[in-house]
Image (spheres, rainbow, N blue to C red):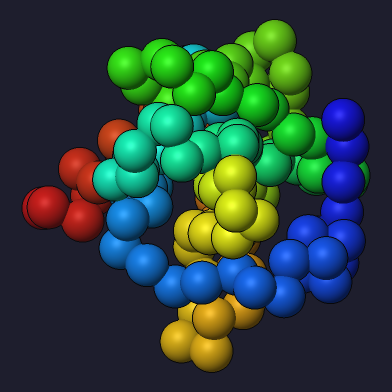
Length: 135
């Protein structure tokens, strides 16, 4: 299923800010190595309708939804830029309760969805710059 950001915002006016949905973005994403996007939630599994990751790349401009198995121990998606080359990725997570409540991360101070955008980095260039910075 694909969906755009406006649809998520417009149809989910009851989105709430909570620390019960947590994601810590990677500091750097290399263009030659697979990485994981993982979200944690502190809700009871029997309260949940769905947990999803929405992501897009500069190569594919529409958000793609990845539904996680609610019964899984981890909610993680593995992305490999060698298989799906791109320059950047933009993503966010949603948690929908059976009662219709919608939670998302990341959101800004006003409670509006603010997806993460991260560029893919050449590891050789990254470590050269780090070494130059340390000297």
